[in-house]
Image 1 (tube, one colour):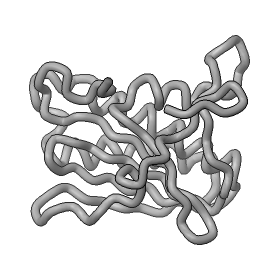
Image 2 (cartoon, helix red, strand yellow):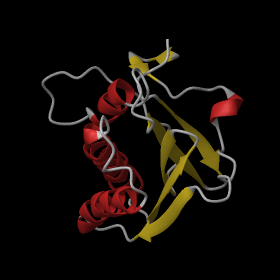
Image 3 (tube, one colour):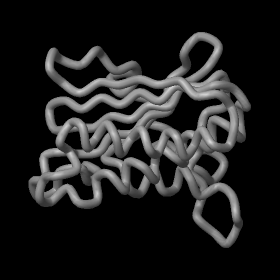
Image 4 (cartoon, one colour):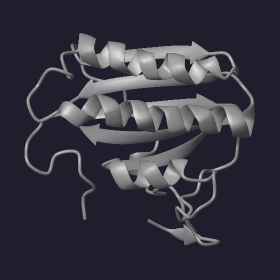
Length: 163
């Protein structure tokens, strides 16, 4: 992961940019939210509802999947509200043993991973970097999409960051 000004930046490799449409039969959901504080809780609830509906909350070994996805989505949604003050779109895709969560907003500022110190702010992307299999950001016209992936297959090592 590249570093700039003491922080980590999203993976710049093109293959981690825009995500192709999921195969038929895979879980896919997208919801848009108004820029208000309650939207973060609504996005968290949507994550739980979708993952339960897709049967991803019931498998042995996936106990933390819902909680981790909810935590990381709430961090990205909060960043969208704080840094862009615009509507944001949450897109969830489950296919091929991977859950991909995307938050798109009208902001252009690329997120950075800052060291988790004693500050009240700036820990969101640190958590994303620490808990996600991988994550990144790509520009979308006037805005950006920040995304992360978690493993859903419950096998040893699935969902953990690849070396």
